[in-house]
Length: 324
Image 1 (cartoon, helix red, strand yellow):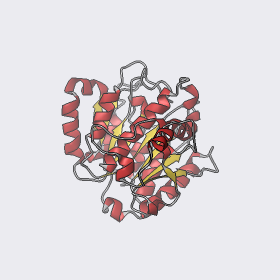
Image 2 (tube, helix red, strand yellow; image 1 turned 90 degrees about the vertical axis):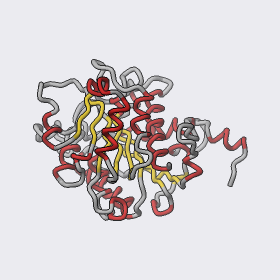
Image 3 (cartoon, one colour; image 1 turned 45 degrees about the vertical axis):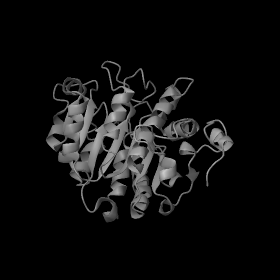
């Protein structure tokens, strides 16, 4: 049903109505949609004092209705092109127990996988990606056709810290997911890209764990040297026709663009919005089965909620790539 101009106007007023992701209908049944959206209010996998990432989904629901309704670059309206539902949040009754939370996240996403629906999520710290992909790799032959998942991992950090047995108590943590998913044969490192890595390295061999696992790593210095076009070309070659999952850590962006993130990296310049969007848009003709945006810290955001808006914008890009 076509909406009136008044309805369209009211739908974009973020302070009005029921706050769902992008004003989508809330329906917990993934069988009834083409693309599922979900929140993962989890923050016990980071292991640092930056624990407010569980407030990220609520913050994005608050602002997302006021953002773009159509994608001008792709010339689509994803909300009209596909049936997109907000499934709600992953229930995490043992929120302070990271390992139990990862189990709950895995179970939640295995049900989405059983429905063979692509899903875009807002976190939450980066440990959620481990739980999500464990779930999407279960009962999902029609979603991945039995193939391992290839990552388009856009981040300031590799999250493959094999040398740590745990991250301040968390084992399937934000520091480990990129490693154990490869070791458990869920992710294919050889066809996966880690782009924008800059971090605050503690040792000179800080990238060795990713290289040992077989990841294709593009540091921020290499990105600047090679240029956007060359990096995209290499990414598309490596990702191939595999099932692709996009995981976007907000700390990959320059700190001036996204100040409210959990592991801010102000020592080196990060991506611009246009660079980040171009990396995501580059896979619009590929087999993208889902994605997530992580590490939003709403309690550190500006009064205008700029980082929450940026997080919503990155979600919109992933949603549009899948809808395309």
